[in-house]
Image 1 (tube, rainbow, N blue to C red):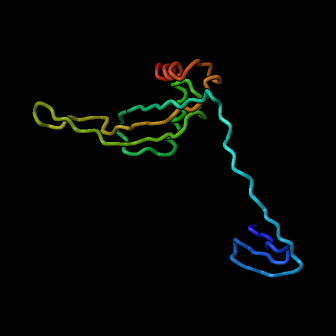
Image 2: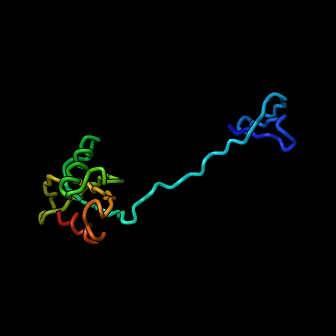
Image 3: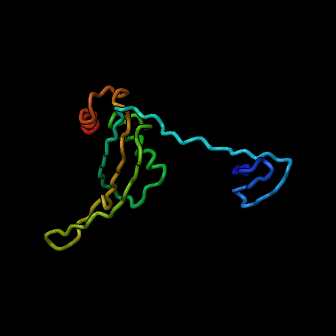
Length: 142
């Protein structure tokens, strides 16, 4: 790990990671290069389609279980594989109270908005769509 031989021979060794210089005649240190990082192969026809859905509810928080169920429901409703849904977030904001003609707050069942955002990332060839626009239209029409 980070050991190199000296320019005059293999009689000295520097441990770069520990910051030590240790002369020894019995140890031969060799450079141990790390392999170059490689990018994961991607299909040329991979697309990412952003989806945003706003829902009204009376719940001020969303549990992890509710988020998981919501993700599963969104995948089923839009006809995509759940594994293709990436960057799934739920943002919760209070709904504004509207006043009636009598300046009294109206009773609202839904007092919070949940904005669900995610991206559908998939290969067009795996979903049988000719273009990103066609796939986006298929998702949003579901």
